[in-house]
Image (tube, rainbow, N blue to C red; front, side):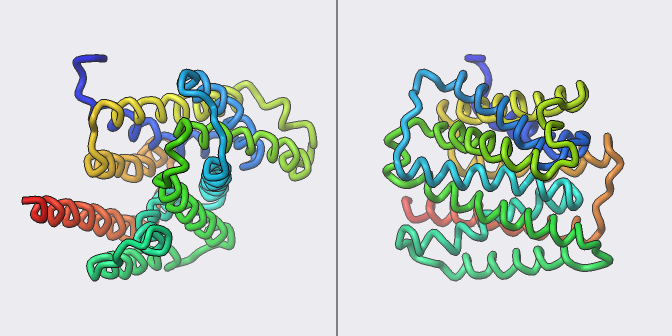
Length: 290
């Protein structure tokens, strides 16, 4: 691995993450049963990979753990209620909320170009609610938006000085542990057969094992390896947009689910606006330094 470009680790992580929508669709488990098993595998895998850094816990880690747990659960619910394209594109509106919340949390200046990208992305988001929507589509879209808000707050609070005092993976581990406990209570209550959560079919077991061990655990490990080896945040952010592009493609190819034209247009607007904003910000920062 030593001779590989660190950016390939980030790209590999994004590709692995992009398979999440497909494997969630392929399971016949409820969102709560799926989340229980995926988190069980994910917590163990991430803890195994990061055990040398310890498992410290403070108030900020507790907060980021809650946010991480919420974004995982809401994303699964979104994928089960609406199309994978809607779920991933709306989750990736997170940068919009970061632009809004960042000045409030860290007293950073809100720039005019930030307002432009927020307005453009809101216009893109509105397209997901156009056309003939079933009640489940609206529920799924709202869950995906909630996942995006939680993701934004999760990354913003990871910037806090208290978050740097402990292993950054702690919030991933504790967030998944929280979901294991919560879903052990919720899943049986929401299932016609209360004990079904403990006995998934062999196919479902393999699917959730992949989601926990590979999609979350190995994907997270590849990403942190790339960042530790010098990948800049700008590079990681842009390469990371491979995930929302590939996610609906995998689902279309292997599951047959086709997103609406409005969703494709809305997703394209959101991704283009965020990448353009990121590149413009980096260019201005470079010009200021020179």
